Image (cartoon, rainbow, N blue to C red; front, side, top):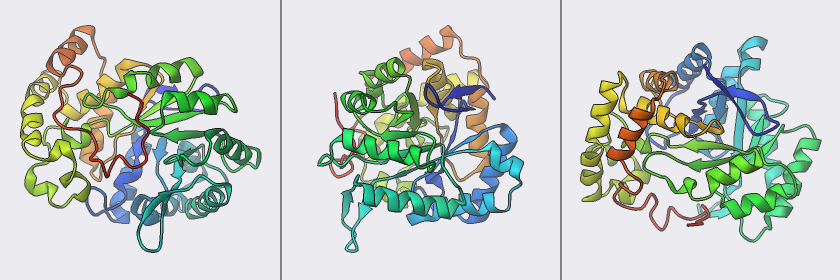
Length: 333
C-alpha cells in the first residue's frame, strides 16, 4: 500500500489508517474476536496506522488493541503505528467536560500506554480543546511528553486553523484530526491549506459520511440502534431521504469504476492531497476490504470531475452535528 508521512518529521504510515472507534458500541456492539480479525486484515493489507482514544467504548477499544499486541510477535508489533487521544472527561454523574491540564492528560496517557502494552505511542491527540486552557500551554505539556519518551509526536482533534498556528508557534504539530469527506468539506476552508503549509497531516475521520457514502446507507430502522445518528440532523427526516437520493448517482459511478461507494469516497479523499490520511472504521472485514480497494484505485481527473458534478460542495441536507454534538469542535467558518 502507498505510504504517507504522518507530519513533516513523523513516520511513514499507510495511506489509509484504521479508525478504532468501531471497537466500541458507537455504531453497534463488537467483541474482541471481531476486533482482532480487523487488525489481522490490516496487517495483511499493509495498513499500519491504528487510531483509537481512551473514551472509545470506555477503554474497550484500547483493551482490544492491547490484547492483540500482547500475543503478537515483535515483527507484528513493529508493523503498527498507534495513535490515541485524551481530553474528554466524564464526571461520575455522566456530565461531559474537557480537561487539557497536565495532571489529567498525564493520567490518561499513562493509562492508555498500560492498556495497550506500549512504552510510547506514535501520536497523542488532545481529543477536544478546553477553551479555558490556552493552546500554547497545552502544547508545552505535549512537548513534555515527547521529552519524557511517552509519545513520538502529537496532534489535536477538530481545531481551527488559527488554533493550529498558535500551537505550531510553540512546537511542530504532527497531525490534526478532522471530519472530512465529500459530505463535510469545511476543512478546505483553511484547515487543509494551513496543515500543508506547516507540514501537518490531516487525518480524516468519517470518510464515508457515517454510511451516506456507502452502498447501503443506514435506514430509519438501523438508526434506532445508533443514538448518535438518530439525533443527527443529516439522518433525520426529511434530510435523510434527501441525502440518500442525492448520493444514488455517486453509487452508480462507483460501480462503473469497479468500486463500492465507500471505496470511491476513500479514493476521492486520497486524491485531494498527499498530506491527507483517511481513517475509515468498521466492525466488518468485508467493509474494510472496500476501503482497501479504494486506496488502490487510480483516480483520474475525469472521474474526479464527475464526482464534483454529482456531489458539489454543500450538497448535503442538514448540519453535520446537532447543537448538543457541537460541544467541543471548534467552528471556524
